[in-house]
Image (cartoon, rainbow, N blue to C red; front, side, top):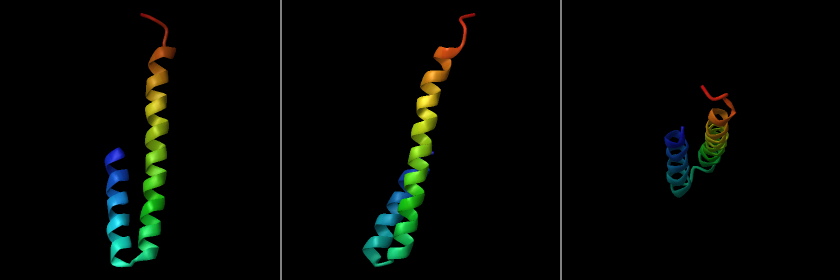
Length: 55
């Protein structure tokens, strides 16, 4: 998921350099959403194993 976020960020940078403001804005928005989803899933994956009872 982090790879997709970085990919959309790079697309946004290239689009901004070429003058495509609308595409760059959309790509940055998608990159932000994917990065936030990645962070939430990462934190959940750190917390969930500690919540299980010991076997």
